[in-house]
Image (cartoon, rainbow, N blue to C red; front, top):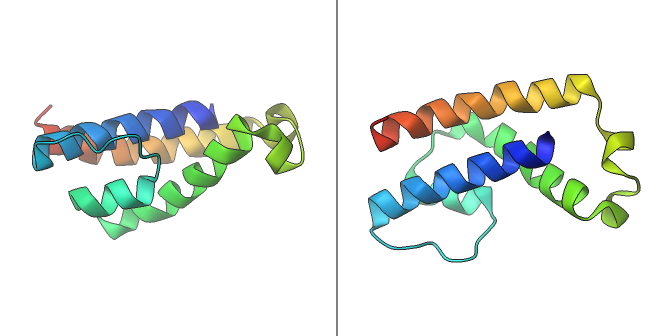
Length: 97
């Protein structure tokens, strides 16, 4: 779940980037860089930092010291999902959706 939340936010931030900058951001995975570029409010940056760690931990489990199912439980997954929705709501407004 955490990985999918990170991916949803990354792709959505890229959509805002493309709309605002009129160019593709390229193969970037940094949520912080994308968020700064599109003007995401600072109040959302805490979740971006969590999702960035989740991206590495779930994509490269050998780097995190354990398998994702060992490091994530239902409460963490629920937290990531709820916080990601807040970011996605801001993005929807920016995209006029």
